Image 1 (cartoon, protein in one colour):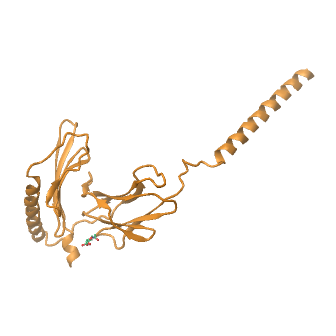
Image 2 (tube, protein in one colour):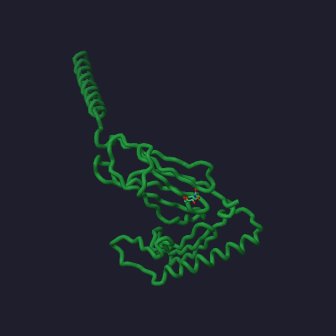
Length: 238
Ligand SMILES: *[C@@H]1O[C@H](CO)[C@@H](O)[C@H](O)[C@H]1NC(C)=O
């Protein structure tokens, strides 16, 4: 069965830690249908091989001194070949013993920025705790499929599982309903999370708090008045 062949996803993690100051890693992994080659630093992606675009991609923020790996893509292609060869060897050695499969332990959907109606924002679908990589994430808007989302390369977690983050640019309009559906080898049906564009409780607190405050203040004043009244009464009697 084709699925069984996909199960094997070998990977290696090389970690270098300089007195706990920084943590650097390189991961190279493959299955029959998928491969990845990623360099990371302190929990962030520094570079990865894009086997579709056939080049090394450097997803670094503008404020860092650019870090690049000349020849990185060619090296990744070599690594992928080695990984696939090792996979074959491993399969024979393990007599196709099926490796572990973990369904995603958490899927979260949220916006990057605070929602302002009509202002461009990004929806994020954060998937973690799965093995092997990767997952597929698809999006809908008001139950219609939407395209144009992007997804990052599988990022290794400390426990050997992976995280992937899918992003969809969107403009919030009141009442719109979005969903992200996650497919994974170990899932029989997609895991779906819903995001509904609603009036945020922060921008319109309503009358609740003012009523609460008014009633509290009134009760407090009545208490003070009653106290004073009885204090005066008490003094008159004695
Ligand atoms: C993800 O999508 C690709 C391409 O459509 C497909 O070949 C693959 O089986 C899917 N993976 C999962 C885990 O569903």
